[in-house]
Length: 321
Image (cartoon, rainbow, N blue to C red; front, side):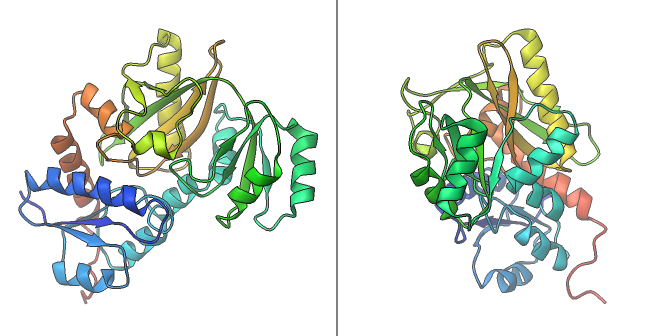
């Protein structure tokens, strides 16, 4: 059967433009199988637009807060609308690197040590805490942003004040981890309603020798190379795929996610974070992994929409008595 699908895009996040690009790709793919697909902007008119359109399912292709941190998910649940992706708790945990790392660590998954700095921590005290724990060869990142926004790697050490101040501007806890030289690896997970989760082939992300996978390299065509499958040993490949699923389950995710790793030359594996709504742009990693696993983009987004619809078929709808 065909579904009426509302695709959510944009909002006030620093990643809004990426969201709109991803949402356009998702909507185009859905229209190949469903006639009634409407892209809606995440703004003050969203509730009225959703109630007027009365979708069978909502596909929130949103990146960063408030679309990816549980806020929009809670609103959709209040409206009784089934939606693609993780629920309120899973979305909130996936967006919060500090909280998710605590659960990964409790599940026995390999994560780096960190210093957590309050958003209003004084710079002198923050720098002293990091220096005492790790020195200055670190990575500084806001805990609740995606697309590498606010992230500063210091592979050779250096001044900590400017990177910490830049991360604090997002108003979040700041996470500081020791810098580890390694290959950037990512693994997507598909976890449809009623089916066992599966991991995509591992992907290695390669950038210019003196660059890393920052915002520009993520979304500028030709600025990064995706090697699929990643040239890892069989044991490491199996491990990162297993950890991707274990991390997905540890923070209670559903439908889809993408785990990011560092793998060192000694084959040490570090789970960095898990994205609850991976990018769906022409340069995004999640669709690349799905394609190699045999899931074309149209079939993939259709399966995700139908999974959410099946899960929400018994939900009370807004306005029902």
